[in-house]
Length: 292
Image (cartoon, rainbow, N blue to C red; front, side, top):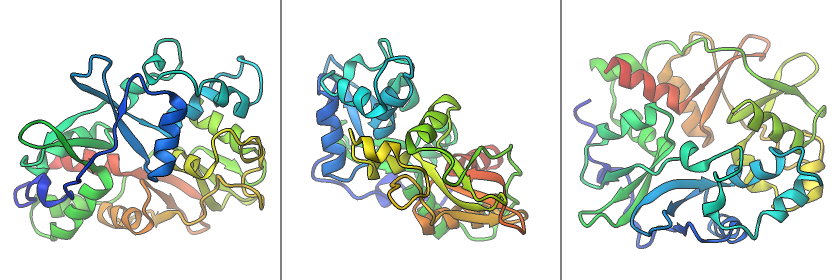
Protein backbone atom coordinates (compact mmCIF):
# COMPACT_ATOMS: atom_id res chain seq x y z
CA UNK A 1 0.00 0.00 0.00
CA UNK A 2 2.82 2.35 -0.84
CA UNK A 3 1.97 5.72 -2.28
CA UNK A 4 -1.02 6.52 -0.07
CA UNK A 5 0.82 9.29 1.75
CA UNK A 6 0.59 10.29 5.38
CA UNK A 7 -2.43 10.91 7.59
CA UNK A 8 -1.57 14.62 7.51
CA UNK A 9 -2.07 14.60 3.73
CA UNK A 10 -5.69 13.54 4.21
CA UNK A 11 -7.05 15.34 7.27
CA UNK A 12 -7.29 19.03 7.96
CA UNK A 13 -5.51 20.09 11.11
CA UNK A 14 -8.13 21.69 13.34
CA UNK A 15 -7.62 24.59 15.72
CA UNK A 16 -9.73 22.71 18.25
CA UNK A 17 -11.18 19.21 18.37
CA UNK A 18 -14.52 19.07 20.16
CA UNK A 19 -14.08 16.66 23.05
CA UNK A 20 -16.03 15.53 26.10
CA UNK A 21 -15.06 14.70 29.66
CA UNK A 22 -16.27 11.43 31.12
CA UNK A 23 -17.92 13.57 33.81
CA UNK A 24 -19.94 15.55 31.25
CA UNK A 25 -23.69 15.09 31.44
CA UNK A 26 -25.35 13.07 28.71
CA UNK A 27 -27.68 15.98 27.98
CA UNK A 28 -24.71 18.30 27.45
CA UNK A 29 -23.06 15.74 25.18
CA UNK A 30 -26.20 15.56 23.03
CA UNK A 31 -26.27 19.36 22.85
CA UNK A 32 -22.63 19.48 21.70
CA UNK A 33 -23.23 16.95 18.91
CA UNK A 34 -26.29 18.90 17.78
CA UNK A 35 -24.68 22.34 18.00
CA UNK A 36 -21.63 21.47 15.93
CA UNK A 37 -23.40 18.99 13.62
CA UNK A 38 -21.06 16.20 14.70
CA UNK A 39 -21.62 12.49 14.28
CA UNK A 40 -19.43 11.73 17.29
CA UNK A 41 -17.01 13.19 19.82
CA UNK A 42 -14.06 11.68 21.70
CA UNK A 43 -14.38 11.16 25.45
CA UNK A 44 -11.51 11.46 27.90
CA UNK A 45 -11.22 8.88 30.66
CA UNK A 46 -12.16 9.91 34.24
CA UNK A 47 -8.47 10.08 35.12
CA UNK A 48 -8.03 12.74 32.44
CA UNK A 49 -4.91 11.02 31.20
CA UNK A 50 -6.16 9.04 28.23
CA UNK A 51 -8.82 8.94 25.53
CA UNK A 52 -10.97 5.86 25.73
CA UNK A 53 -13.99 6.17 23.44
CA UNK A 54 -15.96 8.04 20.84
CA UNK A 55 -19.60 8.66 21.71
CA UNK A 56 -22.41 9.26 19.22
CA UNK A 57 -26.15 9.82 19.22
CA UNK A 58 -26.92 6.12 18.89
CA UNK A 59 -25.31 5.51 22.28
CA UNK A 60 -27.82 7.83 23.90
CA UNK A 61 -30.91 6.75 22.01
CA UNK A 62 -30.01 3.13 22.72
CA UNK A 63 -30.61 3.93 26.37
CA UNK A 64 -34.17 4.85 25.48
CA UNK A 65 -35.10 2.24 22.91
CA UNK A 66 -32.97 -0.58 24.28
CA UNK A 67 -34.60 -0.72 27.69
CA UNK A 68 -38.12 -1.80 26.90
CA UNK A 69 -38.78 -2.87 30.49
CA UNK A 70 -37.75 0.46 31.98
CA UNK A 71 -41.25 1.94 31.67
CA UNK A 72 -42.41 5.06 29.89
CA UNK A 73 -42.04 6.01 26.26
CA UNK A 74 -38.68 6.08 24.42
CA UNK A 75 -38.65 9.88 24.64
CA UNK A 76 -39.35 9.79 28.40
CA UNK A 77 -36.61 7.22 28.99
CA UNK A 78 -34.17 9.26 26.94
CA UNK A 79 -34.89 12.41 28.93
CA UNK A 80 -34.50 10.47 32.18
CA UNK A 81 -30.84 9.70 31.45
CA UNK A 82 -29.82 13.19 30.29
CA UNK A 83 -28.72 14.14 33.79
CA UNK A 84 -26.36 11.18 34.05
CA UNK A 85 -22.61 11.60 33.42
CA UNK A 86 -21.05 9.85 30.45
CA UNK A 87 -18.87 7.69 32.69
CA UNK A 88 -21.97 5.80 33.88
CA UNK A 89 -22.51 4.39 30.39
CA UNK A 90 -21.41 0.78 30.44
CA UNK A 91 -21.72 0.37 34.20
CA UNK A 92 -25.23 -1.05 33.97
CA UNK A 93 -26.46 -0.41 30.44
CA UNK A 94 -26.71 -3.05 27.74
CA UNK A 95 -24.50 -1.02 25.40
CA UNK A 96 -21.03 -0.12 26.58
CA UNK A 97 -19.96 2.61 24.18
CA UNK A 98 -16.29 2.30 25.19
CA UNK A 99 -16.27 -1.16 23.61
CA UNK A 100 -18.38 -0.22 20.59
CA UNK A 101 -16.43 2.94 19.73
CA UNK A 102 -12.91 2.62 21.17
CA UNK A 103 -10.71 5.69 20.81
CA UNK A 104 -7.66 4.65 18.79
CA UNK A 105 -4.88 7.18 18.27
CA UNK A 106 -2.90 7.74 15.09
CA UNK A 107 -0.08 10.20 14.50
CA UNK A 108 -0.44 13.06 12.03
CA UNK A 109 2.83 11.88 10.45
CA UNK A 110 1.89 8.18 10.30
CA UNK A 111 1.42 6.47 6.93
CA UNK A 112 -2.23 6.39 5.92
CA UNK A 113 -1.75 2.64 5.43
CA UNK A 114 -1.57 2.34 9.25
CA UNK A 115 -5.27 3.25 9.40
CA UNK A 116 -6.36 0.31 7.22
CA UNK A 117 -6.14 -2.37 9.94
CA UNK A 118 -8.31 -0.58 12.57
CA UNK A 119 -10.80 0.45 9.89
CA UNK A 120 -10.96 -3.17 8.71
CA UNK A 121 -11.85 -4.22 12.26
CA UNK A 122 -14.84 -1.89 12.25
CA UNK A 123 -13.40 1.23 13.87
CA UNK A 124 -15.18 4.13 12.20
CA UNK A 125 -12.87 6.97 13.21
CA UNK A 126 -9.39 7.54 14.62
CA UNK A 127 -8.15 10.35 16.84
CA UNK A 128 -5.29 12.15 15.09
CA UNK A 129 -2.60 13.49 17.43
CA UNK A 130 0.41 15.73 16.85
CA UNK A 131 3.98 15.18 18.01
CA UNK A 132 3.03 16.16 21.58
CA UNK A 133 0.14 13.65 21.54
CA UNK A 134 -2.43 16.46 21.56
CA UNK A 135 -5.57 15.84 19.48
CA UNK A 136 -5.49 17.85 16.27
CA UNK A 137 -8.05 16.15 14.00
CA UNK A 138 -10.20 13.08 13.40
CA UNK A 139 -9.70 10.62 10.55
CA UNK A 140 -12.90 8.89 9.44
CA UNK A 141 -13.34 5.82 7.27
CA UNK A 142 -15.05 7.92 4.62
CA UNK A 143 -12.32 10.55 4.40
CA UNK A 144 -9.59 7.91 4.18
CA UNK A 145 -11.50 5.98 1.50
CA UNK A 146 -12.11 9.07 -0.61
CA UNK A 147 -8.35 9.69 -0.63
CA UNK A 148 -7.61 6.07 -1.50
CA UNK A 149 -10.04 6.20 -4.43
CA UNK A 150 -8.35 9.33 -5.73
CA UNK A 151 -4.86 7.80 -5.79
CA UNK A 152 -5.47 4.08 -6.46
CA UNK A 153 -5.25 3.41 -10.18
CA UNK A 154 -6.16 0.12 -11.88
CA UNK A 155 -2.62 -1.26 -11.63
CA UNK A 156 -1.05 -2.92 -8.62
CA UNK A 157 -2.49 -4.95 -5.74
CA UNK A 158 -4.61 -2.10 -4.36
CA UNK A 159 -6.21 -1.38 -7.73
CA UNK A 160 -6.85 -5.07 -8.32
CA UNK A 161 -8.49 -5.35 -4.92
CA UNK A 162 -10.78 -2.36 -5.49
CA UNK A 163 -11.74 -3.67 -8.91
CA UNK A 164 -12.82 -7.06 -7.55
CA UNK A 165 -16.52 -7.90 -7.28
CA UNK A 166 -18.53 -6.85 -4.24
CA UNK A 167 -19.20 -9.72 -1.83
CA UNK A 168 -22.67 -11.23 -1.93
CA UNK A 169 -23.07 -10.66 1.81
CA UNK A 170 -25.71 -12.12 4.06
CA UNK A 171 -29.44 -11.49 4.08
CA UNK A 172 -30.48 -7.84 4.32
CA UNK A 173 -32.59 -6.98 7.37
CA UNK A 174 -35.50 -4.83 6.22
CA UNK A 175 -38.79 -3.34 7.35
CA UNK A 176 -41.83 -2.49 5.25
CA UNK A 177 -42.56 1.14 4.49
CA UNK A 178 -45.04 2.57 6.99
CA UNK A 179 -45.24 -0.64 9.04
CA UNK A 180 -43.13 0.43 12.03
CA UNK A 181 -42.42 3.62 13.97
CA UNK A 182 -39.04 5.29 14.13
CA UNK A 183 -38.67 4.04 17.72
CA UNK A 184 -39.47 0.46 16.65
CA UNK A 185 -36.91 0.70 13.85
CA UNK A 186 -34.29 1.90 16.35
CA UNK A 187 -35.12 -1.00 18.67
CA UNK A 188 -34.50 -3.37 15.75
CA UNK A 189 -31.16 -1.71 15.04
CA UNK A 190 -30.13 -2.01 18.69
CA UNK A 191 -31.31 -5.58 19.25
CA UNK A 192 -29.72 -6.95 16.07
CA UNK A 193 -26.54 -4.86 16.36
CA UNK A 194 -27.06 -3.24 12.96
CA UNK A 195 -26.01 0.12 11.60
CA UNK A 196 -28.95 0.37 9.20
CA UNK A 197 -32.25 -1.21 8.18
CA UNK A 198 -33.40 -1.38 4.59
CA UNK A 199 -36.90 0.01 4.07
CA UNK A 200 -38.84 -1.67 1.27
CA UNK A 201 -42.23 -1.23 -0.37
CA UNK A 202 -44.91 -3.91 -0.61
CA UNK A 203 -43.12 -5.55 -3.55
CA UNK A 204 -39.82 -5.75 -1.68
CA UNK A 205 -38.16 -2.95 -3.68
CA UNK A 206 -35.73 -0.74 -1.80
CA UNK A 207 -37.18 2.65 -0.88
CA UNK A 208 -34.54 3.87 1.55
CA UNK A 209 -32.94 3.12 4.90
CA UNK A 210 -33.09 3.98 8.58
CA UNK A 211 -29.63 4.26 10.11
CA UNK A 212 -27.92 5.56 13.21
CA UNK A 213 -27.10 8.82 11.44
CA UNK A 214 -30.83 9.48 11.09
CA UNK A 215 -30.91 10.13 14.81
CA UNK A 216 -29.41 13.56 14.21
CA UNK A 217 -32.64 14.45 12.42
CA UNK A 218 -34.76 13.30 15.34
CA UNK A 219 -34.84 15.94 18.04
CA UNK A 220 -33.79 14.24 21.31
CA UNK A 221 -36.76 13.90 23.62
CA UNK A 222 -39.33 14.36 20.86
CA UNK A 223 -42.15 11.87 21.38
CA UNK A 224 -43.62 12.87 18.03
CA UNK A 225 -40.41 12.15 16.09
CA UNK A 226 -39.97 8.73 17.68
CA UNK A 227 -43.61 7.67 17.25
CA UNK A 228 -43.93 8.66 13.56
CA UNK A 229 -44.35 5.78 11.11
CA UNK A 230 -41.27 5.28 8.93
CA UNK A 231 -41.95 6.82 5.53
CA UNK A 232 -44.94 8.94 6.55
CA UNK A 233 -44.91 12.69 5.91
CA UNK A 234 -43.97 13.51 9.51
CA UNK A 235 -41.20 10.92 9.70
CA UNK A 236 -37.63 12.19 10.15
CA UNK A 237 -35.85 8.83 10.22
CA UNK A 238 -36.10 7.60 6.60
CA UNK A 239 -33.36 8.44 4.13
CA UNK A 240 -34.37 7.79 0.53
CA UNK A 241 -31.14 8.97 -1.13
CA UNK A 242 -29.24 5.73 -0.46
CA UNK A 243 -26.22 4.30 -2.26
CA UNK A 244 -26.84 1.23 -4.43
CA UNK A 245 -24.95 -1.01 -6.82
CA UNK A 246 -25.96 -4.16 -8.65
CA UNK A 247 -24.54 -7.65 -8.27
CA UNK A 248 -21.32 -7.85 -10.23
CA UNK A 249 -20.28 -4.30 -9.41
CA UNK A 250 -16.81 -3.72 -8.02
CA UNK A 251 -15.70 -2.65 -4.56
CA UNK A 252 -14.44 0.57 -6.15
CA UNK A 253 -17.91 1.29 -7.53
CA UNK A 254 -19.51 0.56 -4.17
CA UNK A 255 -17.01 2.78 -2.33
CA UNK A 256 -17.53 5.57 -4.85
CA UNK A 257 -21.32 5.26 -4.50
CA UNK A 258 -20.94 5.62 -0.72
CA UNK A 259 -18.70 8.67 -1.15
CA UNK A 260 -21.13 10.27 -3.61
CA UNK A 261 -24.07 9.80 -1.24
CA UNK A 262 -22.11 10.66 1.95
CA UNK A 263 -23.11 7.40 3.56
CA UNK A 264 -21.30 4.44 5.14
CA UNK A 265 -23.15 1.61 3.41
CA UNK A 266 -24.21 0.59 -0.07
CA UNK A 267 -27.06 -1.80 -0.82
CA UNK A 268 -26.61 -4.43 -3.52
CA UNK A 269 -29.88 -4.69 -5.45
CA UNK A 270 -31.24 -6.99 -8.14
CA UNK A 271 -33.04 -6.00 -11.34
CA UNK A 272 -36.25 -5.33 -9.41
CA UNK A 273 -34.35 -3.10 -6.92
CA UNK A 274 -34.79 -5.69 -4.19
CA UNK A 275 -31.86 -5.61 -1.73
CA UNK A 276 -29.79 -8.79 -1.84
CA UNK A 277 -26.73 -7.61 0.08
CA UNK A 278 -25.08 -4.65 1.73
CA UNK A 279 -21.48 -3.42 1.63
CA UNK A 280 -19.93 -0.99 4.12
CA UNK A 281 -16.67 0.93 4.26
CA UNK A 282 -15.55 -1.65 6.81
CA UNK A 283 -16.01 -4.39 4.20
CA UNK A 284 -13.91 -2.47 1.68
CA UNK A 285 -11.13 -1.82 4.19
CA UNK A 286 -11.23 -5.49 5.24
CA UNK A 287 -10.74 -6.54 1.62
CA UNK A 288 -7.83 -4.14 1.26
CA UNK A 289 -6.29 -5.39 4.50
CA UNK A 290 -6.64 -9.06 3.50
CA UNK A 291 -5.49 -8.74 -0.11
CA UNK A 292 -2.91 -5.97 0.02
